[in-house]
Image 1 (tube, one colour):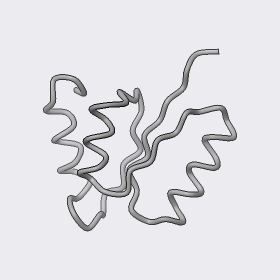
Image 2 (cartoon, helix red, strand yellow):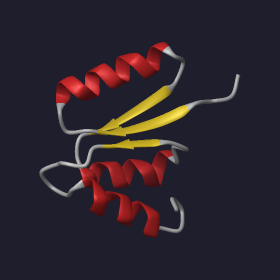
Image 3 (cartoon, rainbow, N blue to C red):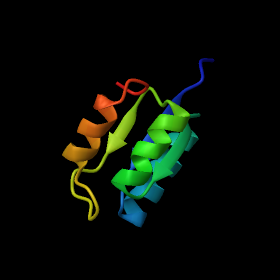
Image 4 (cartoon, rainbow, N blue to C red):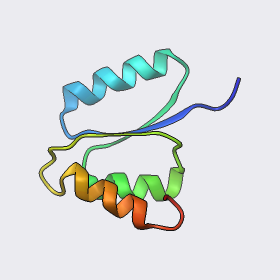
Length: 76
């Protein structure tokens, strides 16, 4: 089976926990970041093929987080 990896960038603990439990039960390797800055760093180090990104976060909204991830050579 191929290695399925996913990064969840979500600041709401309950929503993040639900997503982690769901995808882990479907044999995904799930990483979690609770802020845009932390999500950018994890995208840089873990290279997930799929990122689930919350739009409304306190430090940096999801649109800006997405822009920054897509601007980096390693993660675009």
